[in-house]
Amino acid sequence: MSVIIVFPDGTDWFKGNWVFRQLAHDLSDRYNSDAEVCNAVEAAQALGALDLKAMNDGLRRRVMEALSAVAMDTIKGIIAGWRPDDAKEHALYCEAVSELAKSLASQSNIGPIALIIRTNQCELNQKE
Image 1: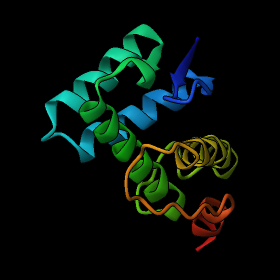
Image 2 (image 1 turned 45 degrees about the vertical axis):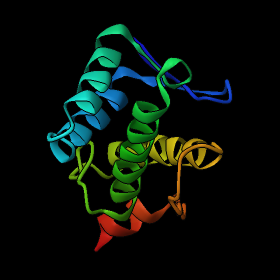
Image 3 (image 1 turned 45 degrees about the horizontal axis):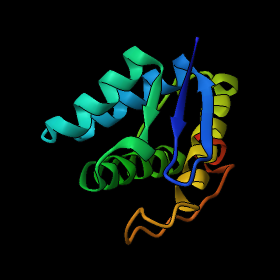
Image 4 (image 1 turned 60 degrees about the vertical axis):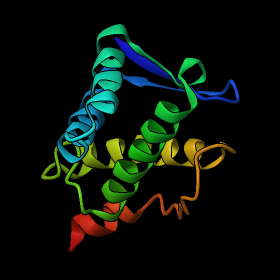
């Protein structure tokens, strides 16, 4: 099974459900005080799709900012992510999350988030 995120500009990010499941778990841990964001991500996990294009502006902005923050903190090694003790699987997860961060950064309506993408940062953090 897979999960798709449809961005406001009509592009999408399509990955295995294990990637989204970990991302959703990390997002829910960090943003547990925002029930609306957590509910949107939980529903997306159940449905296999997160349609940002169809969301109202306020929720869409908060979900996109939460996804961006979790993706960037995973890339930086602040959030452990998927199987941090298995370098190969963790690198696959980091690659998928990096692709998500790049896609989010290309959206014009994400708000004032500066995203600096370093796709190999997860690997560097893993070695430290």
